[in-house]
Amino acid sequence: MTRALIVVDVQNDFCEGGSLAVSGGADVAFRIGELVHKWHESEPDERQYSHVVATRDHHIDPGDHFSDEPDFVNSWPRHCVAGTDGVSFHPNLDPQPFDAIFDKGEYEAAYSGFEGKSHEGGRGLAEWLRERGVTEVDVCGIATDYCVRATALDARVEGFSTTVLTGLTAGVAPGSTEQALSDLRAAGVTLT
Image 1 (tube, rainbow, N blue to C red):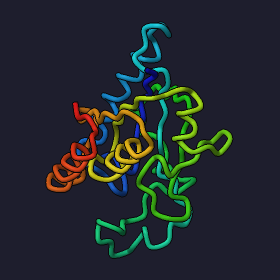
Image 2 (cartoon, rainbow, N blue to C red):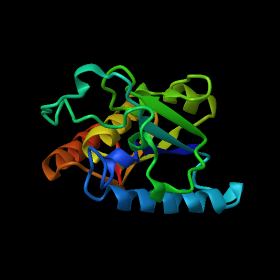
Image 3 (tube, one colour):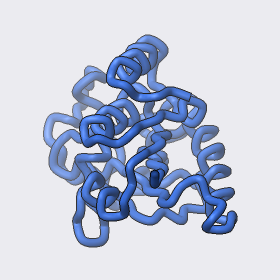
Image 4 (tube, rainbow, N blue to C red):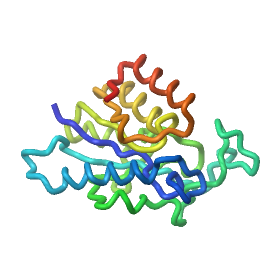
């Protein structure tokens, strides 16, 4: 079995001080950074992950995904706009030795990292993981009830054994986070 870590949308705009901040986002960024640092510093044969990848919201003109009067379900304030500081990974995430970064949502709403394309070669996440023999994925990041949920559900649909590291996620709201966790369990995703 080959396992990869998928770090979902740990970006400035989703952490405190950002345009669409999730409470606890900066702390999650720090804790994921510690995990990635341990992975990066360990000997290759001792690593729990063969690959560590990241996803990013990377909006150019996502249509009605942005709204001046958002409903916070399908429409949102402007966030993670390409070329702004908000799209950057949060500095608490350092180091950032990602094997690949998958940008999503340039011209439409995109919640799942599996909707993104890599910077190198434009491959989708599922294709990229399969090319490297990955069969299991751990998912962490922001937000539990939106992009983490969608990424983990798509990982299951794509046939990967999937675990969400709930201690390394932050949700938008308690109710929607609980519903997301219930949806993930029902889909066969392991929660730790």
